[in-house]
Image (cartoon, rainbow, N blue to C red):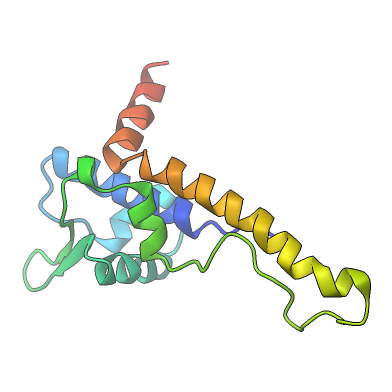
Amino acid sequence: MSANSRLTVAVHVLTWMVLDRREGHEVATSERIAGSVNTNPVVIRRCLGDLRKAGLVEARRGTGAGWVVTRDPESITLLDVYEALDEGGLFGMHNARPNQSCPVGFGIQPTLRQVYDGLEDAMRKQLAGTTIADVLRDVLARQRE
C-alpha cells in the first residue's frame, strides 16, 4: 500500500500559484505548475479541477489562458484543500463486511471507527490551523537555511 499524495500535490499547486502571482504572473498554466511538482500536466489539471469545484481556483480562457487562485492565501486553510479533494476520511473499512460470527470480525469495525474518528478530528484541527500563506512562508524560509 502506498500513501495518497493528492493533498500534498494540491497544497504544492496552490502554494506555487501564490508565489507565481507574487512574482508578477497573471495566470499559471498546468505545464508550468507541473514543472515544479515534477509530474505530468494532466495530473495537475485533474487537481485544479477539484480545486475549482471548491472555489479555490478558477480557469481563465482566451489569450493568456491559465489558472488563478480565487482567495487570499491567508484565508485558504489546508482543511479547505483537504475537503476540496473529497478524500472520504483517513482510513477506510474492509471492502467486504467481516464475518459477524467471529468475535474479531464482529467488533473490529466499531472499535477502529472510534479510533479513526479521533485521528480524523485531530488531523482536521491541525489542517484548519495552517494556511497556504503559512506554507509559502515556511517554504521560502527553508531557502534561507
